[in-house]
Image 1: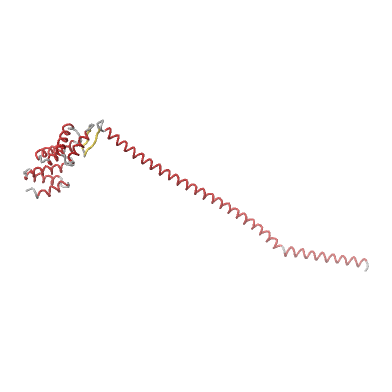
Image 2: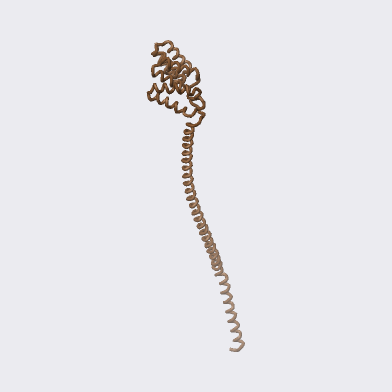
Length: 251
């Protein structure tokens, strides 16, 4: 083979290799490019998923922390409520004790200094020992010690003529005398009571006792008159009901 022919052969071989390489390069660029892009997109997605997982984990951790803090606050609030209830109970007990102490002190002072009180609508000043005097007389009457009650109420009326307990003393003295069958004395005391205290709530009851005294002492006509007065003047009272029942028996 001449040199010229050898040169041409080598040149042709180089050209064929070049074309083959060019073809492979083109095929690589066109046939494998989608796979490369896919690989690139998968990496981004994987990274995004990892970032999202980290964000979710952080959120869950923060939520758990908030939940723990909430439970802690609930526990503290429950403890505070318990302490508050205890304090409220202690305060109520203290106020109750103070009230009892004040009442006891007030009662004790009542034995040493005058006090202004209201007794069944009648106001006035009560002197030391006055209330006890009245209470002792009333206890004697309720206990059936009629003579002692008569003496105690009589002495009370003389000693405390301006007492707010005076109306009741006159009322009970009249009933004491009625129980002792001292009808004139009972009528006198009860009429005095009605005349001096016409608005007192015990007036209808006093008039009913007067009517009983009049009836039992034989003065039936006067008793019927008194009973009719009770019915007419105090129609809604218990005494009026009793008076209505008694009219049939007083003839």
